[in-house]
Image 1 (cartoon, rainbow, N blue to C red):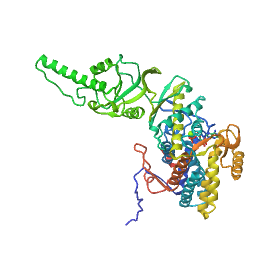
Image 2: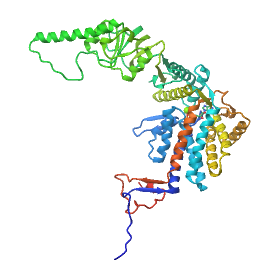
Image 3: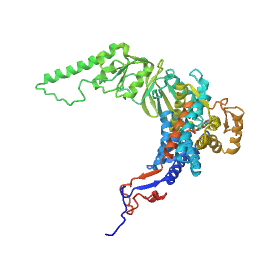
Image 4: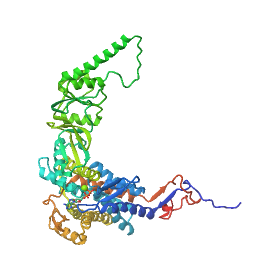
Length: 545
Ligand code: ADP
Ligand code: MG
């Protein structure tokens, strides 16, 4: 019998595989590439990116998560780093570039350790311990902020927006963001979904305004309804003002004209009754989530009631919070006590569109911001700037703690982490030290992006922190080291703790991978037989497709 060696295939043909160091290296390279792609946008002197979509649509921004979302990234390891930005965006709404740049740096320092033949597990353990300690240190060094300190809050808002190109509207936007958040904040409970941002191009950024109430992109249903209602008493209806059941398609047979007449009269009577209920309750404005019969519109118009129909559910909920009204689902049960109130409800044209403004609510728990800007791109960036500011303010108020930016907090953290690492032993210590070093990437990048010498700046920063000046950071406008807290560069603690935990989680997850098995893409060229087997693929083979 001839003894023939048969290769054994356990993976389907076309499967790509890379293992060990090669896998780690390629993951690290992909993660770092993502960080490198956005690091030039970090900080007040960061540059913007212009992203052109496949259909030719353009986005101009320096917002980390926006850039990464638009970039349509395919590499799976890179996607994990993009995830860092997404989590940061979802949890805080700002600090996305910081988090990704930090993740990239953690991978870079890990690579140095890997090259020294330190096992990934040891690096991961060291990183994990250091990350926990970092969050502890951050909490220790942070300062208090409360809703009564409006100056501090304005500084938080300005710091959030400083790199955004909003044509010098920073002060105005900061004021509006603070005002909006203070309205909707309920102690430390800040639900930013209660701030609605309505974008309208065609006017200066400084014309951005806060409406103490809600702006709806809907017009009144009947032209003869009033344009303005002062002292509005508002009914919020989750029911159609119609007789026919719109859900089912019923047919009615009539055998003589009088029956038809009776039917019409009956319908008319029911509609009148509904309108009377609304009038009786004392409403002079109605927001209806459903449809309204033409005849009912006519009756409502006759009663000088301002009516809007087909309002979305989420807008109905915001209206309830803004006006203090209760959403009623049976018109028959509408009562005076269900009505909300607003100083003014009016029809207004904005950017050529008919809108309804519900303004001057007494104690609105939902508000609207009308974001303005010369062009579509400016308005879009104004919206992102406002979202960053609002996110930061909410984060600051919800845990009441903040830190100084401009690299100050990162250097202080790095210094204290190094002191902690000294207490660890052997190789774990190396990993924790590497983790501590990684934080310097933030001040270094801030300096680089401002065209300053990062080595000089870092040396000066370290010296200042040695002298217990814990908020010493880099003033990128004046090219010197200053006290960032005094300069009003303040950020919520949450930005930093979230960045540390999501960046370190992503780095650790990537470092633990030592085997990448990728299924062949359907429709791609078939691999030569045998290539798809168990043999380690040389790095770079993935580029074959
Ligand atoms: P991110 O997406 O991480 O929020 P940004 O482009 O908004 O990125 O930059 C944030 C960084 O810029 C933070 O480290 C912050 O401390 C820093 N920064 C903000 N304002 C100033 C300032 N006036 N001077 C120096 N650094 C600043
Ligand atoms: Mg920011």
